[in-house]
Image (cartoon, rainbow, N blue to C red):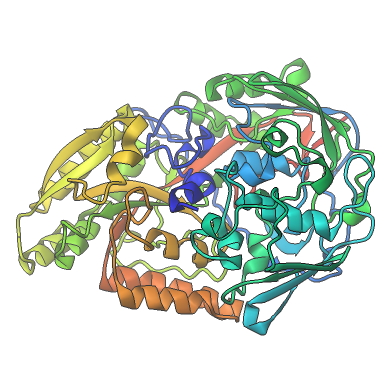
Length: 596
């Protein structure tokens, strides 16, 4: 894969609620996103305190169905989902956007997945598999066994041949999106040169199926957290006998609890129960409504107003990702009558202001900028604490197992910036009065953020030359290795709760379009990341990623940790079980039900 495609699900840090694909929306702060109000407007009340999700690894017993029901669950009825955009892809192999992966849970299943144990508590469990897999050979070999009774929508059994085929087809030339971790582990980084898919009759020897229930993956190197990768929506299965190649993107076959009965592109979609889905095999999906009706084409303001009104059919409606826009945020957070229908969650993605290390070579200058950074002022521009939190680490606390906080640059004690400390560091640097060329996405909100940045850095003696960039080509501009900027924003997020899907990417290969926007090239760091990736003790690996997070900022300082957006969404009064998924940052469908 090209690493840029990996950004599809992860780096929607700003655009997630606007549902972009490929890369984040360039820190737009657009009204469709949960960006809060513009400068000069009253900030919304502070959001409730957020408790990060707890994610653990489950057992074979945990992997049995049915799913644990939410409080007050009722079966039956029709639930309506209202949002802006239809889904670009329904073929699992083409899915690397969080909204598509989230919807896919209704019609597709994976080898492993995340079981909701209680609100905010999840376990990685076997979905189609009897457990989370068995590793051997130091983590290079992974074995899974399929459950009894798992079937396709036509009643035919799901077999190991289907699972093998599903992975093999991801190598085909027509598959241009989707995750590629496992493909690379099975072959090489340029995996499509190693294998071109199964359609010419060639199989991938690195996947073995000794019988209809057993699948064995043989990787080139150890991967202790591979069972997390198999939970990704992009690795959901496709039936070998019903694979229509490119056309499968429009007519997928269900292995999940629902079947698509009708689909008017960009307008609506209707789902009905899959009679061959057995809840006894599924520990993840509750599938409580009889029917799903999805409506597309509505902006966040329209969605919020409909859900606030709570009239007629909209009482049984909700949204996957339409966060309250700036002009409604105060009202939504401040109205006690909406409290029981309000959902709130910070983004699980990482947001950074990267230094271009080819141009800003003095670490003292980079550290001075970190100290002078106006986090609090930027937060106010975005709408206040209700719209953005102020993290201090590279890895996101909401999606990093084994997370440990640190505050290297005093953001918690002086969120408005420490100008005196910045001046002290600049006096020790190669240039006490440097000029920084700061590139930003030219949107109204980012114009105001840029004013805050310029004002703060100028107080420390740093001249800021602001360069506005076209939002449509923002990532193209900052993604050039020979760009003419010193600093710019970029986003990324974990594909599963581990630093192994963050740090080796944002500090990985330096190339045009790659997400190593700091152009960090450090052989010692690369060797250390490779060592952690190969660690077979997952807890030790998680601890090592956090230690490396701090070490990178202490010894290199390639970036400033940026604000973390907060989503605030509503649902109708007859919708129960609505919760924001802590990894996808959208309302997950597994616990949704319709109240009488």
